Image (cartoon, rainbow, N blue to C red):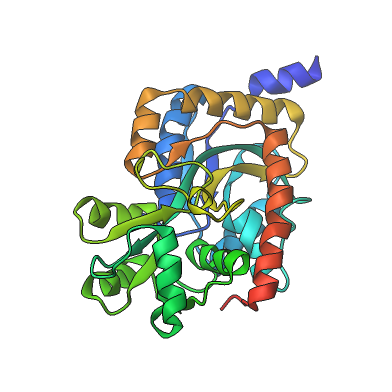
Length: 307
C-alpha cells in the first residue's frame, strides 16, 4: 500500500531534466521537444537545465549525486553512457552503477559526405579513391572524441582505410571547408549536413546507422555498402540516479511512451533528423552494457584522449 501511495503521489512538483550540452544542440533540442509533451502527460512542469562541460560529464556527475526521488533526471546518451567511459581516464561517475535507465527516446545517425568534385558516388568508390592516394584522404569532423570522430575510427579499424582525421571546433566549420573544397570529405551529424545534402552542395555517401535514415532513404548504410556489422547511432534518453524506486521508474517509462506516441512529437523529432525510439529500462541497460566496451576498444586502438 505504501508503494502504491508513493506512485500515486508522484510527481507532485516540477521535474528537472539536466542536459550536459549547451542550448541549441541536437541533444538539447530533442530533449526539449520531448519534455514539453512529457509535462502535459505527467501534469507537472518538466524543466530542461543545461549544464555543459567535460563532454557531458559535469551534468552526469551532478545527476548521479542527486537524490533518487525522480525529480532530477539526466538526458543520457551516446556520450555520457557510452564514449566517455573510453575517452576519459577517470570518470567522476559510473554510467552503469550510478544510474537506472528509464528509456531511450531518439536516435540519429552520422553521415559521410563528400564535395561534389570528388569522383565518388558510393562507399566502395570512396574506399578505392582513399586507397589510391592516402595523402588526400582527409576527413573532417566536429572535433576530437565526438561521435563523428569515433565513427571514422571505427570505420578505419573495421576496414583498414587510410583516412586522416581532421578535427574542427564544431560541425559547421568542418562543413564549410568541405563546401569550399579545403577538405574532400567529412563525417557529419545529420542536422548539420542535411540542408547541404538536400541543396546538392555535398554528396551523401552513406549513413552510419544499421538502418537507413528516414531523412535520407536513398542513401545506403555503411553496413549495406560492404562494412558488415558497422553501426553508429547517436542516441538520447532519460536516466535517473541509482536507487530510484521501481514504481517511479515505471511511471516515468509509461509517461515517456505516451509522449513518444504523440504525432506532434514524432514530427518534430523527424524535423531535426531523429527517429523516435521506444525501449524498456531493461533493454536500455543492456544496450549501455554493450556500448561501453565497444567504444573502449575503438578508443584504445586509436589512442584517442579527451582534450
